[in-house]
Length: 550
Image (cartoon, rainbow, N blue to C red; front, side, top):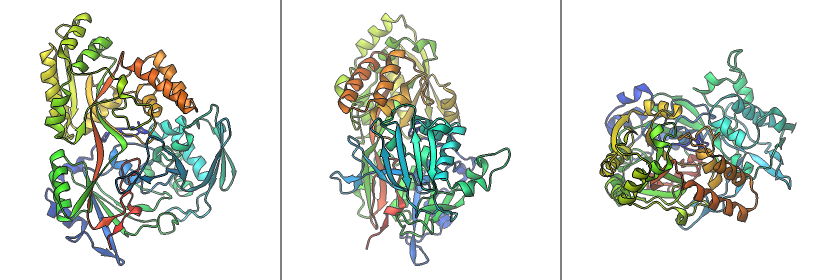
């Protein structure tokens, strides 16, 4: 889930699908009629074109503090601007992206961020020319109220503001209309990066939101689930189960959009999304299957952008509440039996690579593949099961039926585990049920796609494996590991943090509750007539960056 629960919470699949999606027009032509775009995607509104993006789904809700799927990340990031944002550079691929080994942030709707030497006090100064889509100027009270709101509502926003150390009213003080002081109880080296996270710090126009609050809904939750009022370059002007329409925030001085309208279409079938990019009836699509990505790469009329910025990994998790899985030797046995090469060849067809670290890959500093002992070894797997007294083991493995990779990977795991004496029942779940069970932690063994909004090893590991984390999907608990994770998250010295990362990984691989099955790049396919792609940390196509090719 994306930044876990995210912050990232962070899976690539949403927790809920709207009931009306199954009735979506099946063909690309029908989709076109629904959005009103011309065959080359350049329908004109006020002299400037319409941008069309196809994705499997439309968000089930629009609350900026709530993660309900990747569709929320990819849409609302264009609506709710944050105080800071990551600095992007061209790292040799021909477009800007975030250097994940050494990420740095810069002010966005803020003017400056000044930390104290002990990293316990931060002075945040806002720009004085930023205006919301409702026409209200950005002031410090909007930031304070957004933090208060996120603290009051369980979800991703709450996780992020609390990770930033802003847990209590005393932690944030408005000094004047454009200045706040963030007064932390403990040093926090990650606070600057957390201030770019759209869930915790996608700033809401508090004046507009409060106008729709009620005695029983102090923070306008109901209204914000169906409406947007942010300080970013776009606003939502249409929201249905099949599509969304975005138009520019007319008074925003930041990142002035070229496109006067963006249409986001729910296109559940990957074949239909491929058809839309082939025909040019959509300018942007994502979530294509491996063979379809190869087709896109072969087209002269489109281009695909693949980036490691998000550190995407398809992972296998074990539920620690299941008695048969509490012994780490059992979990290790199942991992040693994973047919990694077979899964990569049959499921991903050359578009993914093998597991390397607890994170998945080595994109973030501290993730060290040399510390990972897991290699396919059925004989060792059998010996571990025997040592654990786990003969005749029976398990249930759940998979998301909307995922292109989970079912075929599950079938390969079932066969491989059968060879070491483990019987595995496969149960496919529709996204809504899968998401509900994920939240309740009732799936014994399950698969999930993860990606992150903060490129920091300890940020990710704390979210996934610390005992008190809201998205510790496995229910994993280790006092020894908790101690290392807390130290690594707060340690300001990079060299010492590297040492703590090594210590964590050595401890982790002795009792792992999860393992990556494959590492993937985030791939966005775009029509060749569109230029300006930038790899943002959340994987979205930031529409204000884009413009028609001259």
